[in-house]
Length: 101
Image (cartoon, rainbow, N blue to C red; front, side, top):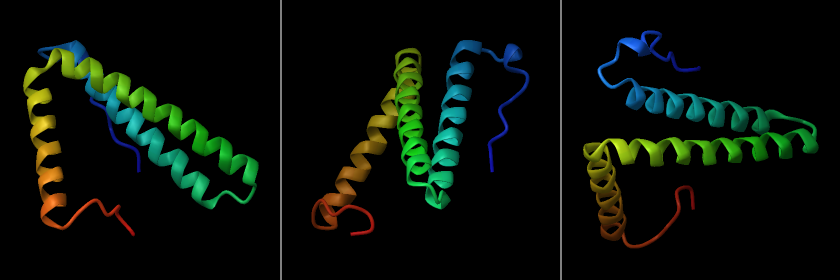
């Protein structure tokens, strides 16, 4: 299911920040869509191309995120706090096991 991006971006208090967030939402939707299609694709060439496209979308996501973090110091602080929580939880669980392993 694709996200609904607000249609009244022009009315936002900080339109540029909201544009970046909407861009991130769109990129995450695209990543999910391409990876889901790749998971069911029968043709290996199509599967490979879909995964490559999904990877490109991840780069786009990183670009939007980097721009957002430059504009929103609170977001940058919260992102770092979240990273530390995950790292701390991982250490308490006994190491660096990847999900699913």
